[in-house]
Image 1 (cartoon, one colour):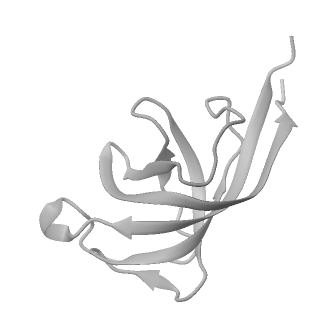
Image 2: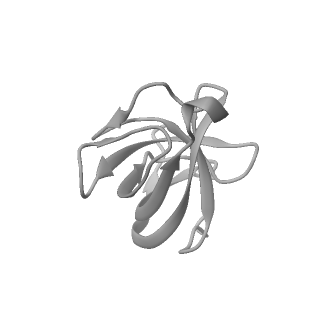
Length: 111
């Protein structure tokens, strides 16, 4: 059986936790590449692009575009309104809510 991967591209409202609540000390910039979690177990790598500014400081929120790398752990069921967390290693530094799915597609896994 061939293993398939799924990738997503979506817009979201992203909030970084304030530094005093365990968030980063410095802002994140356009094309930032954290890991994302849509449940407490599985993490997926991706990239955040800002639509309004080029940085987001701890404690701030912004509309962003997220492009997730192809992954086996995602299922074809992310939708508007779903929440997620963003991580740097094991540390949770922010959260978000999907606003609109731009693209979801299945890609073949390289074997």
